Amino acid sequence: MIYSWKKIVRYGLPLLTLCILIELFAGQILQSGQNALLKIPIYLISIPVINGVGGNIGCILGARLASGLHVGYINLDIRDKKMHENFLTSLLMGIITYAVLAILIYYIALFSRITMSIGLIEFVFVLLVVGTLLICVVTVISIFTAFLSFKYGKDPDDFIAPVVTTIGDSLGIIFLFLLIGVA
Image (cartoon, rainbow, N blue to C red; front, side):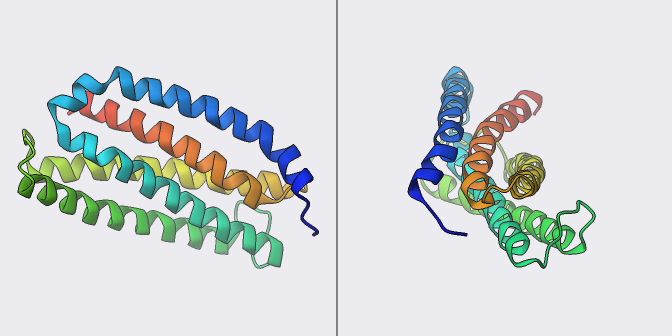
């Protein structure tokens, strides 16, 4: 496959434009809920971590799937064993990462004398639930984006990162607000 910047721009620009619009919507959701976040500032600190880890895990999975599809060790089949292994590894990696980072964020906030109105267990629980939901959705989106783009003759690498990070950023904020509302 020969890469052409014109081809990448032609296929990428509409997708990136849509992603920008979705990110603007997510920013509006974040702004509308800022009063709730200011009451418990530790959640405000957590948003970049929630979105970053979710997007990174989804993009790592997507890159592995794209490489596997190009090389041929992953088949374009939802029942493919290697795809399932990659999915489960991503899920496990995400859960462990969210758990460790939740504990670190809590203690950094505590030592930084940020007002805390939530306990460690509750905070870790909230971040783990939000993170697990996000990882599940982002990995499924990553799989379908990789498979669909490859099936239609497009390079999955051009589609996975923008789609996964946009959906991850938006859903990370939404899941956090839903859980804060429930908790």
